[in-house]
Amino acid sequence: MSAAPLIVLTGAGVSAESGLATFRGPDGLWEGHRVEDVATPEAFARDPDTVHRFYNARRAQLLDPAIRPNAAHLALARLIATWPAPALLVTQNVDDLHDRLMPGSDALLHMHGTLRKARCLRCGAVHDWDMDLSTATPCPACGTAGGMRPDIVWFGEMPMGMDRIETALAECGLFLSVGTSGLVYPAAGFVAAVQGEARTVELNLEPSAGSRLFDEAHHGPATEVVPRFVENLLAALR
Ligand code: APR
Image (tube, rainbow, N blue to C red):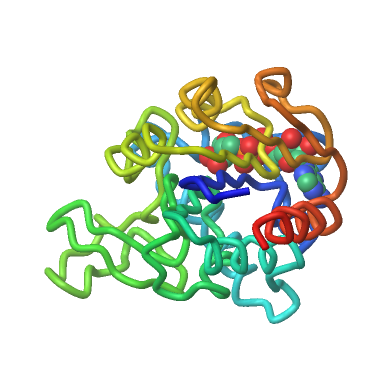
């Protein structure tokens, strides 16, 4: 089998077995919080303290040594590093578990941003960020307080890197969707965009909303299904 340009799309399911909650389903983040209260520009304008508290808690979790990349992150990092054609990992996750295994890699794109960066609404500067944010946090670049926000994409905002993603989708020959419910656009539409041009594979705990659009699906926990699939895929190249 020859290798075609690869896109891997990941969602919260890939990090679930690392101890990070997914959004939907029992114990999901959206069970305990209303999206409109914490994940929209309107919520931030209305009640920035609540929004900061929500993301501060999630950022702090990433600094807990118990939260580590799992076997699925590892297999995907290996796949991207060894794939003999262009390969792009597009993640909807704002955690940094992919990053830890592929630091600084240009092949990793956080389309919903990342908790480990903060952005100043006054001057636009983006900074690496590990601390809590509050309405009193000054921007390290312009010194203004009150304008710092997590550098993540909220509902109603434009995902990051869409030009690059669209170019990659147009050339894609193999599309893997891993650990995502397929409910949030534009990511949920990627499989339809490559249909007929690319082999499409879903790897998820259960059938996603768009499951029937995929050529092939393997259902089960990511730490089992993903390493097995990646191993078979790479073996078929040899
Ligand atoms: N292994 C594989 N898949 C899993 C596992 C696991 N251990 N645990 C859960 N899943 C699956 C669930 O079955 C579900 O289909 O992961 C998916 C997670 O779905 P969501 O919680 O909806 O997360 P995601 O698809 O990443 O959400 C997309 O929605 O709220 C926004 O911006 C947020 O990026 C997020 C976007």
